[in-house]
Figure (cartoon, rainbow, N blue to C red):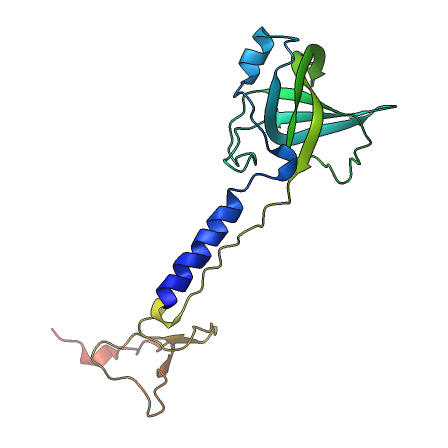
Length: 205
């Protein structure tokens, strides 16, 4: 029974991960940025996404510069270190740059328009332009922090963690002895034994 519940919950989670937001649903041709540069002004409907590089709020519209990323089945940009280039998304509304901050993931749908010449740093760059009809700002990905827990198995000799003391040290047991009745390892003092002075009249010949 527990296995059936686990399988059911897994299926529900996977189905939720593959669901395309309503604002992004539809049939769109898989046009790449390279192909868009060759078919400038073709008014082809596309669904592109990526990571926000910057936002430019103009008088009647907002321009979002996006680093293009391949999309998952849910239309969310993939978290990969590759990109097919950059494009501009024209949003006919105000976009708050504090919310649509650099690094956030966004997916847009709309029609391709004429390319625009701009710059990335000091380098000239031709941006494909999408006049959006809708877009979706994705929630931030949850950071998974891996915590290394050193259990008692890390110290095969001592059941408790090691505490450092400048004048005492632990010595591993080799013959099963060296343990007190309480089960705690016995600590031996690090003592410096002075050398014994030899007598001049007892030398062997």
